[in-house]
Image (tube, rainbow, N blue to C red; front, side, top):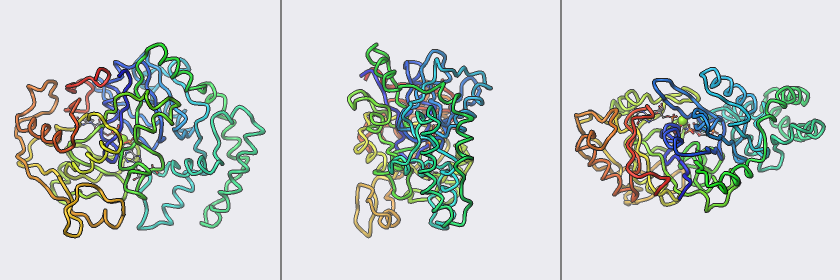
Length: 430
Ligand code: GDP
Ligand code: IMO
Ligand code: MG
């Protein structure tokens, strides 16, 4: 296999950015294929931290091509700001190393406005979205009201498209007591950015096809995680795209056989940001301690992440339903020092033992985790770069997880730093 897809196997923030950065040393091209700037991918290289939202994580490596595929929803203002931020950190971003699919859908100011208004209207039942307008932009895409990157090249057509979109949304905004939007405001803002955005735009699927024909290695970078997938996740507490590897084909414009090895990025425990079911969530000191040691605060919104024990039922389900070949187990170091560690191995649903996550929100709220307790370790795994440096009890933990999830651990990550990674199986050569 020459290509690799990096996918979150839990509720996002598993460390996808770090692992994409590690693997991009071998790749020629990195492709984002879904989500938008709701993502926050952190890279730590020689003590310098980079936080990426829309830009593929390969952008920091000179000589690599970064593609924002058609499946991504792109806020043009956020993209230009992010380009400026990373340029300010000394990263080279130009038309030579960044290509934006001309058929990607745009996020316009009406989308975050409605996202926020709708969340407010949901009150206690809010989803806890990032407020970036992701769901609203995807709704418009599916409703065939969306405005795409290529529309920026045709000003009259663009104006018509905005009018068509606002005819719909202004009724909603008015109904919710929010301020209506003016066609000219959105049009003027977009036209002010059009030339810059269009300078990056092009036929992304062709660039990917050319790279493939030339035998280049392609890395597909997923955002969010399996249980935020609109089909496979804890619906309705999900994002509005498919996050599974199969989406890489549709969201980049390649055949499904081109996806290659699917690497599921998996935290050694579990976190979630936003609302929704979380069977192994800890509301005690241990949960607080994990959050503190793991610095579990959102990369995009700064929100505190909810923390809990590793849930092997969830990860196994992600592996089966998402076609994950092997996992990268991250944040092992955060579990250093606990006397004992718990792993969820099944659920109790109304007295019955089940080995999968039921689809119903009601059932998801009622399931109780069934735990196995295993010994912790006092030695440190933090910063380990070889198997030999991992405490024996931590090695046991890894082996046990492999058995429970029915997939191998291909990579182990022991700190935020690029270099603190142990490669057991190279996904590009598996
Ligand atoms: P992503 O959205 O999946 O890319 O993950 P985020 O970047 O949002 O969150 C992961 C956080 O964990 C970031 O702050 C990373 O720097 C950090 N991180 C990644 N791998 C490790 C690891 O092995 N150990 C520790 N302690 N932190 C890690
Ligand atoms: P990365 O790529 C964690 C969550 C939000 C909310 C739900 C819907 O960094 O792993 P949205 O704004 O997408 O409509 O919000 O999805 N969410 C994420 N949680 N990591 C992410 O991305 C997320 N992107 C969205 O918190 O619960
Ligand atoms: Mg993140």
